[in-house]
Amino acid sequence: MQIESLDRLINAFSHPPSVGKKTAERYAYFLLTMNEADVKDFADSMVTAKENIHYCKVCANFTDKEVCSICSKPNKEPIICVVKEPKDVMAMEKVRDYAGTYHVLHGVINPLEGKGPNDINIKSLLSRISAEGIKEVIVATNPDVEGEATAIYIANLLKPLGVKVTRIAQGVAMGSELEYTDAVTLSKAISSRREM
Image (cartoon, rainbow, N blue to C red):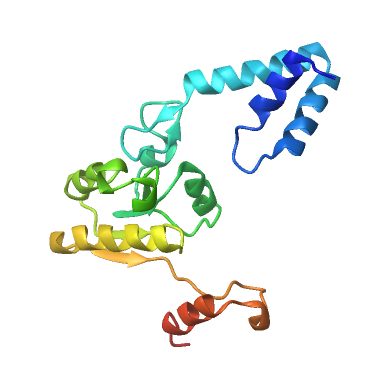
């Protein structure tokens, strides 16, 4: 059965990351079973989000205002947490123990993909350090090769400025079992140990 508009819909649903052909087909068929008002509301919400959401002029997180709600908060600590993507800000905000601001890189250094330091949002981080009187920068990029390379690059840039640069702790996750933990993670846990 060849229906051009259905094929286009399946293809459109297959663009987001982690959505394979089978999942895209399920989404497409589900959409076809929705009533017309719900489909129009769904499409309208996507268009509205795309039109209204942009990057915060301070931290580059997503916002629908000029400056995001986190950067607008009064009484912030002079700390910036550097993350790879806006969704990482959402994850960090769930912790509730952090009272600083964020800086979104929109990527990491990845030579295999042709991404160098000039291809991610690092320059504006440097200008924020002195402008905002930042005392500490927490680098919270993923603990993979690209995230580590980016963290080291940022640390080397910031240390001469007299800013404390820290890295989020890495190691064994709470609730996991040692027998199922890989050697690299265990090694990080041992080297990041702290006194009790």
